[in-house]
Image (cartoon, rainbow, N blue to C red; front, side, top):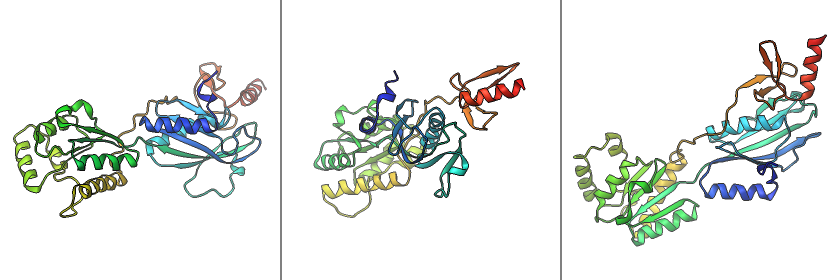
Length: 308
């Protein structure tokens, strides 16, 4: 029994919440329309992860491989899509932007599936313990971001990755050492809470080190939107506002690593459907050629033609 398929209904959503909290990207699929006969039902849900794991149920032998291929494309694009599956005469008037995939399954059913990519939430590392740092951590936590609040003495490059956001608020206590450690990991963002005068001093120091010019250009000192004279709490708001603005512009998403298998595809010679060239696609060897089919019926029809 496939454990992944045993997850149905609310269990799919519970699995989705768990994956999101762990920062693992995936696609959540929901059947929003169907025309029977079809094994997929209204509200049927499934998850397909970047590692190629499927949980839930979205449809039968014809719909599932198409869903998996389109789910990978959805993860790569990072944008939701509406997928229509079925015979072309069943589609009707489709919403603009719908991806229509014609299928000639024996069930003659049709489905519309909404594919929603769920990307990992930003990883914010705040270095330094102060009222501003604590406020920033609380505010980012309310956005469901992954937040680490670290004392300057405990910080190391191993705490961040290329997708991390680093805000240094050590208030002059080892700023340069923390910065050098952070830059080694090439995070997506590095900002320092400091005055303009202090920031100029830090930049002068970094100019004497072996730092990539692109990293120096990207360094934000002072971090956050310029709101003028602010309190510690307002400073936290200004920093988070800049980070939210950058994320909305497409930054901090990182590159999603797709480990899901991408098998070669073939065209079913009977119905014209694109199928995966895998052992489960009813392969038939004739001479030096291997044919693949969406279902046993198409394979039988092809064999009948060959014998005619």
